[in-house]
Image (cartoon, rainbow, N blue to C red; front, side, top):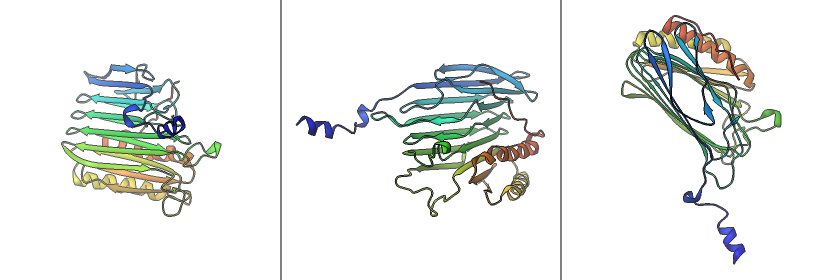
Amino acid sequence: MKDEEKDEGCVPSLATMKTGVLGKLHLHFSHDGRTKLHVTAQHPPLRVIRAFEHQDDVALVHLHNVSGGVLGGDQFEIAVKLDANAHAMLTTTGANRIYRHRAGYETAAQTMQIMLAENSIFEYIPDTTIPFAQSRYQQTTHITLRPGARLFWSELLAPGREAADERFAWAQYGNDVTIVANGRPILRERWQIDPAVQPVPSLAYMGDWMHTATFVVCVCGMSAADLHTLETALTTIAHRLSDGRTVWGVSRLVQDGVIVRGLSKVGRTLPSQIEQFHSEARQAIIGKTLVLPRKIY
């Protein structure tokens, strides 16, 4: 009887699932002649030190995860608010490592909410996300832009720890992204990869193209003519960078933005290439090319 009860109880119900660390980071950027950072909530392991001046009025902030990665059951909440005319750049200090899931714990998750007021600028330049074998992770991002707000957003995803011969060995990875410009959704994306159900390396899915990259640029209220010009410029870069190891594509959103996608057999090529898209878009929109932020540890 005890053995039967043990077998029946080996999969916990949702009501009994445990959570890991509840990390929280709320950042507010005001503008009064220059952009200033206000940390309104900060619960470990998420942490920032201070804002650094970067490229004139840009407030550069380094996002730290002092635990070194996302452990099974961890729940992270990040909120970023920019006042009118503020210009902030958020980067990470290393790869986002998603560690092995712990039995009996909830799926590790991170939610990000970004609110951009009129004529503000937000640039997000993260390092690569690396899901370890048997990890479970859900990422949800919601971004709102008011008229004149500008967004430069990138994401990089690796198949796992390739040095340890791990490729798509994770249990589950989900991503949910919504971008709303002046009340209208312009990007809505929801996907989940379960390698046990979907054989990712098969030709029906990704084959040898194991690394992915995404870059989104949005300007709330951008004219159709300027949007076409931006799309053309980014498409030119995509054609130049695409070869036998990496392929890029560019698509216009329903309004106010362009999305760039990359697939690569070699992950080390993607960060420097996505930088070229970011720099070109930055020059076209705010008249200055990108200077990558220095990393601090």
